[in-house]
Length: 337
Image (tube, rainbow, N blue to C red; front, top):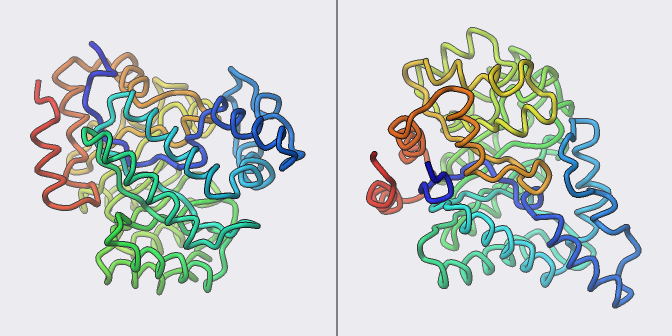
């Protein structure tokens, strides 16, 4: 089966984590030649072929390196366009890209987000075969004022393509249900018509009963990772028929799960009535596995035939945060073999 040709939906892709090492190197090279940066070559920081980043080594890539390289409109637009090109070339027809609004030495959070939206709009004009929407992320390390500002920015920019908000970031931050701090912000997002997705039970530190209750109380439409949830949460997920954004390569390469690909919890959830599954890359620039490869891995390790693969690819249509017209369009362009 040609997994690249398969029309696919990607709902859990982080913008900065999806930038390829080559694109980062090209941006770095121009800045280095212009005397605008003194950071290391991305190829030295993230050597080709290295994909075994865990929680301890993963987040510093962004906070101490990538965020210090992508600080101006030109580099952010270039990185965004390159990410879109990568997903388009891989057969993705609908993409919900997510990013945390950032203040850089040159940009406000609003300018940062508007720059991304402008790059998405320009790319979409040239490539109408792929529709892209934006999700704004609240980082677990944020204080309440910052989280509320992220949500208000998302509400304001809905007409330009923002469709949802996310909770992400280091899962060891705000453990034990402390994320309830953000509850009013996520309630505001839901009331304004934004979709809600959250990184859910991503690590043991974020899998407490207190936290899972808080997150489910936000009425999310989708959950990311779902690794350390307890049986009570499993039953509630099934009862609500939630959509699960499952990231095989990320979870296996980062040692977030046991048993390799064959032991991934995708195998459990595909047998449960109710929940929908959306395979995702998470951070293809870090883990090196495009969405077509994720489908190939699922087929290989869970013995999926062509019909099952096509059915899996279509499962998330109704869980996208796009418009009714977006969903109808997806039903018309995605295979039904």
